[in-house]
Image (tube, rainbow, N blue to C red; front, side, top):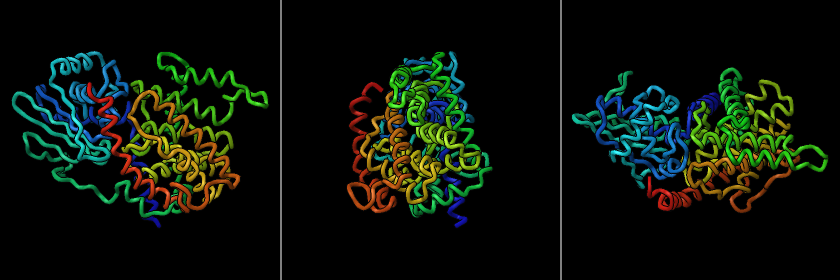
Length: 437
């Protein structure tokens, strides 16, 4: 039992990294920065090889300091920076000189990117050549998980003295939670040591701050949250109160604002969930708002955040960290779990709320990171809150119907099988939108 606790807490923590911009281009920039450091001289050629899921998520998302987009731009920015110690925060320090150098590399035609259809999930290989040397950096199985570094074709040794040649996946991968029941995960989340998980609250507060800054309209404001805010402000409910004052609408607007800003390339420290900043935003803002609305108190609030992150982790273990199925589904399910528990729901009702979200939203395809992700995330958290409210009254899917099984374990197992089929969508999306990148 103690081992289960440690596993869940460690995996949630591992998936909760601070990323300044969209995680996939940040990963490419990180790998390129590391390769530039290893190379030790100006690059004359840069090549990035990416899994379909990573490629797809780099095609249309905004990057700081430039209006250019795509994986080649991310690689060029990373190479121009050459600061791998920043990890997924590397692009936070992009300035005019960095952008000029990146554009020079791109305009010289020395940066390339291709999709390796054999790879699945999170994968990025950056090869770099200079006048005298070569360097390679491979990230695999996690957005900052370097598994191989080579200089002039030979394996490099980490400073800790560990060779990275042929590093294999460990037993602490997200897939390890597949052996657990959701009931066990729920028990761990609601009884966790609150001191150990305070970082989740700090990350959630940062997401709320990003939403607030976006909604102020001081250079970060974007069209979708502005239009949504206008609609909510003009839409009175039956009681005569502004619809925007309700929990559902406040959560929807906050998530839309924060995700919109992030997808536009705004540099902001966002805590990821399962490696995704959009999912981190989606499981954080609604839970903080819900905890405040029921006056949950600090202990219950931070454990609700853990339950949301852990539920997202559990579903993604079956669905895939980067897949053709939109991560807003699992994030919305995490919101459903936490809000239902905050409203007094028991384990059965919480699991029922998660089942309801999956039954409602499964099939939403991930067509890459971009501005309209704000709409998907906003829709998912809205459905998550509604599912929680209904499930807390004892109403949720029961029995086997469609993708929903008798237990959440049955459902997510079916999701895993179907997701493998849907992953064939990624090359089609890349083919439609990726020819210029």
